[in-house]
Amino acid sequence: MAEDLTKKSYIFGRQKCKKLSARQQNLVETLLPKLKINPETPFEADSLSQCDKELWLEIGFGGGEHLSATAKVNPDIQFIGCEPFLNGIAKLLVAIEGENLENIRIFDHDARKIINWLPAQSLSRIYLLYPDPWPKKRHRKRRFVTAETLKMLARVLKPGADFIIASDIGDYIRTSLSAIEQSKDFVWSPQSRKDWRTPPEGWPSTRYEQKALREGRYPTYLKVKRTG
Image (spheres, rainbow, N blue to C red):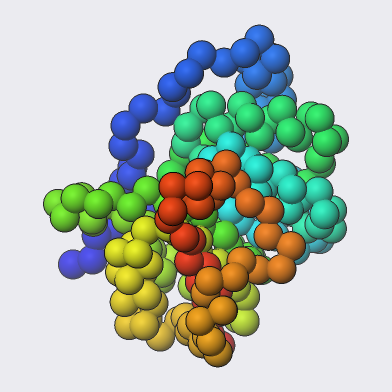
């Protein structure tokens, strides 16, 4: 029997690292409650259900550099950002306040919970940025891109919508492509090497991506399309 991913927590390790600044702590206490999604309530009861904008999801936004920059240049898109680590959320909250961004909602736990909460065919795009590669063989079952999670993503993505994956870990890309190639719900159709070596147009780089480049690790960008 397939494992029920919607009833399990896939959060491992610490959810808070460095001490927050006074400004960050204040935003966590005052702004986060206004933006935070509660998947224990029905989607129909959330303000997102009344939103007539396209809905994009970013999984693992880290410090929020990509999410905040993308939201700023796409004010007509509504974004959901998922990130379990409080320090990253606090950094995003600073950007939201500083840029006066009104099109970002936040979920501070495992993205699978919010994916299960969303209605079918509600998302026009999903980003998965530099997910934890779980390099040890015994931990690989914790990787995000699996046959089971692809089925979950397929349910919430509109036909023809993009699932964009960025990683600097070759083995993670290989196992992700293996799962994608075995899925009837997604297709990857590169025309040349440039398609996976070049970031999408207008791509805002993250701190992690810049660090990887400095250390000689070159990212791969997979633009996968939902079939149908």
